[in-house]
Image 1 (cartoon, rainbow, N blue to C red):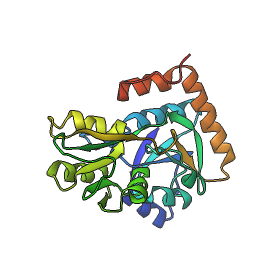
Image 2 (tube, one colour):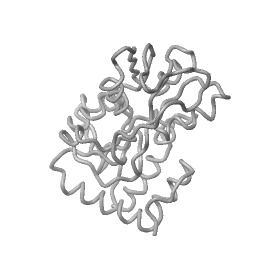
Image 3 (tube, one colour):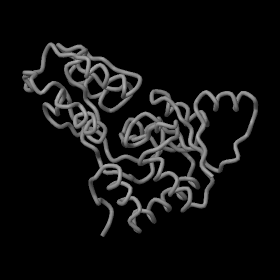
Length: 249
């Protein structure tokens, strides 16, 4: 059985002293297609939802999905509001200081800039730009560290907000994962395109877990290894991203 619990409902249940029937609770954003999103009926869907279901089935665990905003997804893991993060999260040294990661289930995803195809930008020395990224991401950290001088940096709570501002012309370029931006570019009718250099920032995408959860980590990594070996992970990657295979023989 796989359930969806929103952040609001989760808080109410915890406040009431209720307990969960699930063996494992999986935190996800529910707003980052094709990784994880809410479909037209309000149901969680996407690559990580399908993969999470398969992982729990293989590990013989009952799981519930918890929808949580991105900027607080690690703090709420640490607070015990769920046990695993599956939210398109890249492994980074900074994140490894506070949480543990499973083996990757998607290889490193390059970050790309999207903007007007007619914009004239000196990428050797970009100046006077409004540059956007979703807050608390590796892309936001990159532009703050490397592009803040002479430019305006804007961060957003959700990916959809960042795309809306890009389409409205409120920012010149948006930096995000290639897997997310590809659909934006393809669906823009030519209004935006990939521009500028490709940037390699984080490692592969993996499950995040609290430090010290060795038993859970072993179960999930064992299940993931089996799903890689039998082709399930590659099948899902090719279904949602139309690329791969990465883990097959």
